[in-house]
Length: 226
Image (spheres, rainbow, N blue to C red):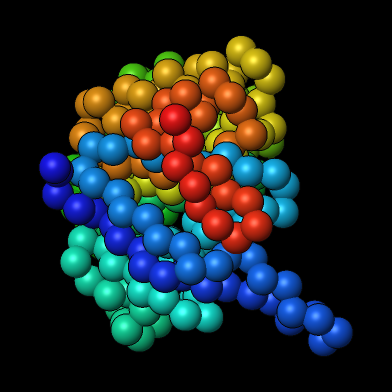
């Protein structure tokens, strides 16, 4: 057994629209070890994004516990949570969320600037751009990049601080088949080269195959898939 990076226990989450309460997650538990890829499938609206938001400290459950690297993140104040999020968690979203007024490399370095890290990180970013065949795009703005290029830039941003865990929410959702396959290979490479733990939510069966552990989320319940 490897080092446990993330543990969620007995997570409940519901939303109240004023007329009725919708239960999204029900007594959900999951454990992620170092260098492990976990994939989570499920229909749209099943709660996959909600789960990732809770695991990544962007949202809070109604009940339950979430530990990252041994720290109970639900017991931390906003400043402490922001610090943990910046240092230990990487995010890759379906819609990239690149800032339009900044170049590709500036977008990638945003988490570094927030952390006040050394200038060495810029050299690391340049190396990652080269590794992902994006060297010529570093000074381009997001609207000058293709969808596949924006996905790769978002992926570099997600790992630039070498987080303990990378959370990827439908990372291939807006990509054509060719770019989806490229991103799948990149996720495998990141997992191998950086010993990166990754949780991926997906509709794509090829992405789901990446998981060392595979789950399906339905009716608020997470079930292992063989």
